[in-house]
Length: 318
Image 1 (spheres, rainbow, N blue to C red):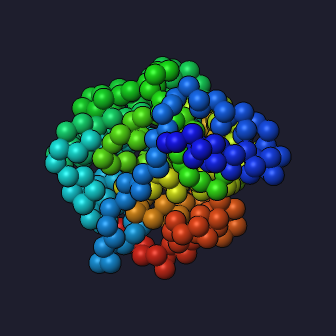
Image 2 (image 1 turned 90 degrees about the horizontal axis):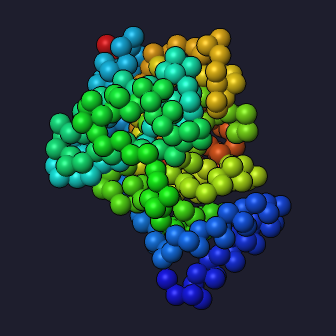
Image 3 (image 1 turned 30 degrees about the vertical axis):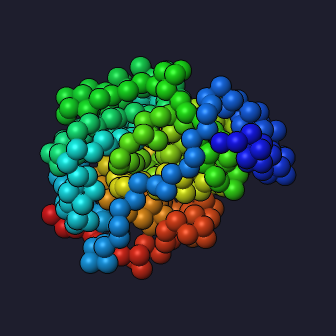
């Protein structure tokens, strides 16, 4: 990128941040200078739509792996999303130093099974990674995700300082930011969030889970959290979203801690529409999508449909 173009994009981000009163956002954008050169925004990882298939499927079962199988089959099966020889990056929520029972991180059984599905479809490489909020080694170990993913055949990557690229996110708020390279240099991206209450934006599900691709002081984004969530969703556009609602953290999110705040819902959803997925998943928290700011904003941006039934929705009975 030419210097003039870089300055133009950076000044755009600075002006927007200043308008929002976000001095921290300005600092965060400047911190990307050590990750040059800038990588231009890609078009996303989406697959072609299929009008004969639902855009959101749901299955409830006491066995999370069974629920995943049925939800995935109903949306077209793994072969629709992964082709032989492709590299797949799986993005679970591994943000917190918590056990699976505390429901702050994605169910490790679901992550392991998703790895197996991708390898069975012929993927040449499956990466499981996330940028944790707590100590990464403790998060990946205590969550059970490292063990489950590695046993299934994945390459589990704990981010290192040299693993980031400066990426032009081309968002309304987010311009050039450090992004973990495994979310840029991959063929397919599978987003695997868990459903949780969030103290700042009501809920954290699939679109909010994408915060985990960013390096730097991403807590500064909380000053304009709804727009930053939508900017990230617009940049990533995952191949497939797999929502873990097996255990739902209904209070105390996003970190959790108390088992009293966890409700067992035993549900897995698969989606090609991340807005519809979040709208349906919000109901596990007693919310509706049309009352969650970032979900509504994402629909207005053209990222999907809040009315998930109109988008194409199927509940699978086992």
